Image 1 (tube, protein in one colour):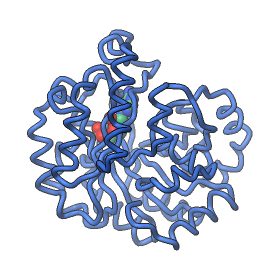
Image 2: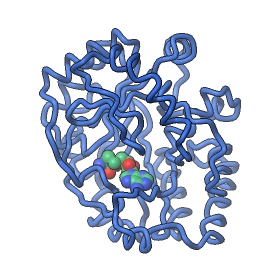
Image 3: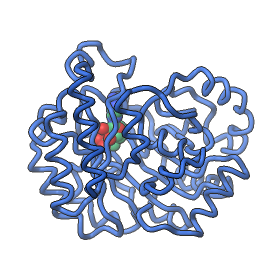
Image 4: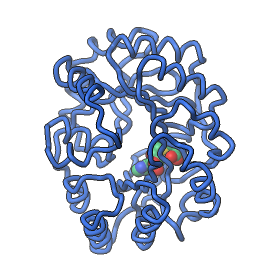
Length: 324
Ligand SMILES: C[S@@+](CC[C@H](N)C(=O)[O-])C[C@H]1O[C@@H](n2cnc3c(N)ncnc32)[C@H](O)[C@@H]1O
């Protein structure tokens, strides 16, 4: 969060550390995308989507369960026509709202985002952007420039670091400062379900170059550039070695487009369905959650890592924490 709110912090601490329940509902608000990024698996199997009434019921239930933040994070939230009603309903329940988008529809849908607190746009490069995302970089930047001053909080550009964009990272950080937005980074995750040639093309293989790039991000952060990742996280991803205990199940409730509750967005094991009641699924899947966490080798999705570090009261992360 960019502005510290003692009330929200108290609610989050009460929910996560005392009641030991997740505070954030991360929802696949739709199941289709208007891009087809090779490294992303979420758009590849479009399925059923919850109706607006189902989503309202889920939000009622989530509110009773103690959820305080609603994050529309896949597959491409701006494709969902009734998004403004969903955001308004979440706000009416006192939830913080956030959304991540590829930005393609941003200009035409900005007036539908009045109830959005935090907007994040994927910007995976400058010169390499078109090769990675399939459309011109200028189109996305034009959209960001058109909307950034209409938002409640600073816009966040999120960049997934791959072998394709290492040469662009410094320019992207400079750009974030020049246009007065924030920026975050996370390394590419090599999903097992995606073909090996994609990872051969995009995966981080030249460790020396990758580590020099992360060192530059660290330097620029220390110099005051608007990078929201903590230094703890950046040092961890430099080595690509898990240096945290995952608490994702105590932090984030992941719900798919058809209402399935999954343990996390990486392993994607179903724990049940929102139709069965969040608290019921939550209680009945305790052992399953524990087992999945114990056998997990870890990932570097920054939301999971930074929030887990914060859960373990890492002071540097708490100090740098700006985004949920
Ligand atoms: C799945 S997308 C959904 C939102 C929207 N369609 C977008 O492109 O931002 C959410 C985030 O996941 C990231 N993502 C997708 N595949 C990834 C991968 N293999 N490794 C790391 N991040 C990935 C995207 O870059 C984006 O920042």
